[in-house]
Amino acid sequence: MRLELSPGQCRDLRSKLKEGEMDLAFLLDEERTEAELCTETLIREELVLVAPPGHILSGREKIFPVDLADHTILQTEAGCTYRTLLEDRLKAASAGTGQRIDFWNSEAIKQCTMSGLGVAYLPRIVVERELEEGRLTELPWTHPEDRVSTQLAWHKDKWKSPAMSHFIHLVRERIGPGTAN
Image (cartoon, rainbow, N blue to C red; front, side):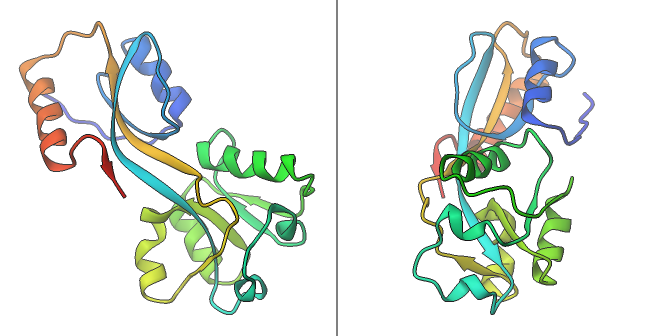
């Protein structure tokens, strides 16, 4: 057995699973069914809008998409599920484009947000420690229902070796299907 961990966008990982290029994938995506794939939701992840402490928006009771029009948004790469959710919210509100800076790494987004470069929209699990330590502040986003899910996925027709079956079992045992955050 060889275990190889590599990052990728959900759509690319799904394609690789369908084409047999990989056996299993962890996806951080909206829940959806696809005829060729088996997916198990492991954890539902809340999305949060964050800024550095003392940011001008932190004193507001609610943050609406239009409130972000004049602020720099530090965002993940194009195609990322939670970036798309935010873009859809901004577009629906005709909030304009404003200044955007793209990153390929959520750690870089966090560091730049803490440095005051802008605001970010990330899964709570990514920024939980920084929020607890007061290095980031959560803005009262008007769309708290936005969520993505950590999912384990594989091709439905893929033969599961004993090692693959055991790995799936360990993931279920340690993380548990349907665990809510």
